[in-house]
Image 1 (tube, helix red, strand yellow):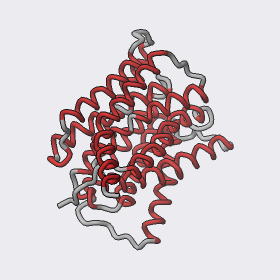
Image 2: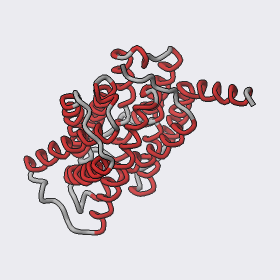
Image 3: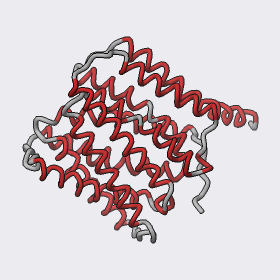
Image 4: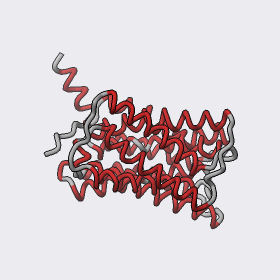
Length: 305
């Protein structure tokens, strides 16, 4: 039986805010570095770098694989690889801001999947309302403009499919033996399998040679391989083992806000009133889902002093 997951607390909220900033910057960095290294090769090489780091850490700690994790581990890895292939392809059609926003429909798919599979992750009517409010904010911010080319719409669809793959990955992790595995083991399955998927796609499309030796390439691989795919993902899987995933993933609605802000600063992507209004709805949705529980625990702690 998996151990009961905790409700989100101050530590989890702060760590999720930091992780969301890293994840929001990720798509921007991929787009910025695309002239020097193809997006699919960024994903393949960063996965390889992170896999070596995770494997070395597990070996140093003397970790042994938990029995019964191979099949769900490979399944999660395939979904992980498929997600990032969709991201790499989609970035060729749509903006980084659109990509990061539509990718983070993943919490909706995760919440639906977990609510269906795990009684402990069922959402209350208030939480469902919060998710609907946050998602409506994203939709209002980025779908208010009915224009856009067919290519841009295709990129947006690929981003939503990537979000679906990410959500399904989280459900596989939480509903299998991986839920009790060490975070490094869960991550290593995804990194190795995802690297193989990305390299296979790169070889098939002829992009495997699109890698220039430059400071841009080195910088993006360090950022993505060490900070994102290694450190942030280990932190994410540690939190999935400790806290209720349905509450954690709602905080990831912050990531599109970070992503659009970085897009404006680094890629000069436009910012309009639709985003500002949608951002308020997103933050309101996060408060509805988690704010009541957080403030309730704060009051209880003060009362006990």
